[in-house]
Image (cartoon, rainbow, N blue to C red; front, side, top):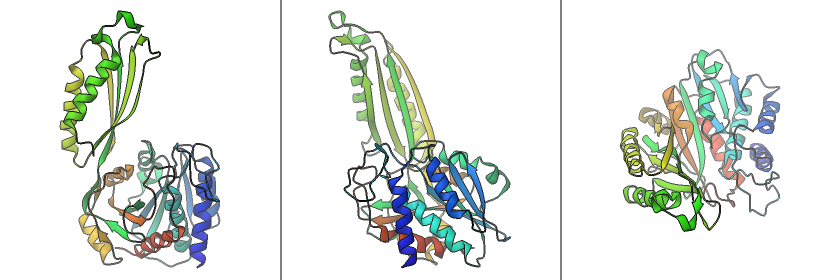
Length: 352
């Protein structure tokens, strides 16, 4: 009962005080104050925190939680609603941090068989968070045997842990396209130089080539007035794929589409730091001997946890919750489900 109550208190405090990517200053202070008197070493990495329990064992086992929130105004009518206008924990990171903080409390009071690193990572929602962690001094001087992550996930049965071997989450590519020509009066219009018209043709081509489940145009901005031909417009896209080689083929298609429109200047940028999240098959089998994990299919959310695949053996799992979907203004969940996540991580502490 005590763990459940403390999980609830921690999670609700964090829920009320959300902060955006690389602005998690209060969150960082809160985490550090929680661990300050424990038998651990504390390292700051930008606005993130690494908590290291060194029991002078052979291996280091790591667990990751994300710190950042989203630029979404919360619409829930609850007594722990976000106090920061226009910002909310609409992706469950408050719950992830609460689980990891209580895991640290458990580690601090038990004799265990490994050394442990708790990663409170900044900026998962925007590129840069996991990279700054793996490029930190700690990771340069320590080898991590396993890294685990857990994410709350609506649409799955509440209170059940799910995972999948091999490819689990897609790589998430951010594509920025800017089209430029010149502004002029609508009476002097030439379609070949109208950026919004060219944009409409590009969008038609893109939707023709790509499955809408992996391709999304999330932002369009262009024009200054109704009677002025648009001379500059911007398009922001996300493209998702489970295999890097397939993405390279899709990238070539997009570039060839853009090259068709030579009457305007088109600049583009592909940010492909988010690789596919890959779960080690042998590690998942080992986990299954320690805790019951339901197998599930591939999911379409992305996570920069994928970069940890490059430096360690990893597993990414999901915890089912009853809620609106991720990144919605009314996302919320039953605090009691966090105890399942805590017990799951505790079961992995003595893994070999």
